[in-house]
Length: 132
Image (cartoon, rainbow, N blue to C red):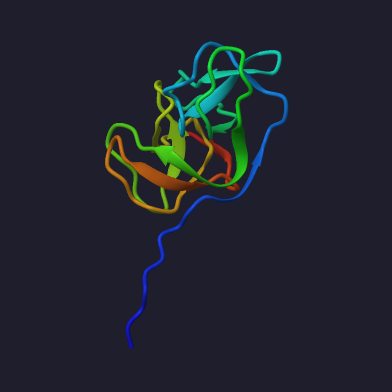
């Protein structure tokens, strides 16, 4: 008997209504976002800092921004890549990296990816990694 391997895909995504881009985010699709002002989002630039979700589109300055906060989303892997099962934090450029102690994580990787590649993250698992 042979088994067909099915790659995970984006599913069950819910986004935060009313958000707009704080500056152009035209090259920021699938990166982690932070709240940067009243209903404004920007790329999360704090390693392991709190991120509200993953950008799903490519809005220009002050255009509507679709940011997924739950479900399974694509994300771009950062330095070192990610492995399936890793808890995922944001790096300083909004890419996904393996979470370390005293960092917030936005979900768990469902697939493996090298740096710069797209992987699937389950945004339904969020939290903070305590110090050892």
